[in-house]
Length: 130
Length: 175
Image: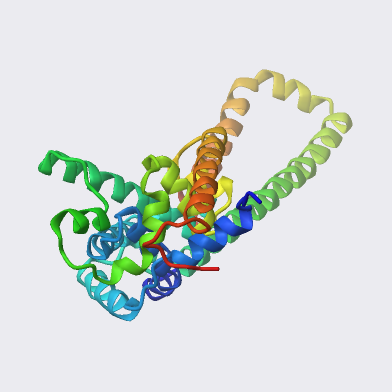
């Protein structure tokens, strides 16, 4: 009868003839000693947790800045409406105002623009990330 | 991960890596341990390159295999001769056989194989690595790994037919 080695026979033969290592403790002690002489790489400095907490802080800050800007935009819309309605009412009630506005239009436009620019600059310079 | 956890992981995997390198070095355990140590120190220093796409042991074996390859090239360049497995050197030099003799069967079985086939066989049968892991360790396409394995398997079948069940001596009986 001709013998035919199976996959299992090959595995068993190789595993059965594999060298046995008995000095793992000595090897590990030697390796640990060598590792202790080397600087600790940043990837193994155990700072993963710090980085994660910093990422969380930055995300929270970005969210708070977005909320603040949204509040400011809503406030600006409300102020614009509150100003627009009385001005329109006055204009409709007293047509003489339209004449005055037409006469001094450039000055009024310049004054309003300067006021808005001043407000924007003041807000930009006082903006703080908290 | 920190240094202690890295050492713990290495401790779990070092034995299989050293066994693999010992057989690749033809039973020269001192040379194998030197290569393993070099590989593990390299792994420690370049841990940030481990992306976690493969298993940690696969990554270590890849570094270990590359170190073995470099070491072999360096040795063959300096000695200007092909490295011979230690059991063959002992036969040549007439030195009495030491502890490696008990694993003679394995070295005789895979000794005639080209290095790539020998490596594939060891990873597949001795270290139970999958084809995918062997691909990653040896940086070879799946088809090449499979053809190496197929040729090596045929060789081993032949060896077992004529060796273990035949009249050949000098191997460790496992049946």
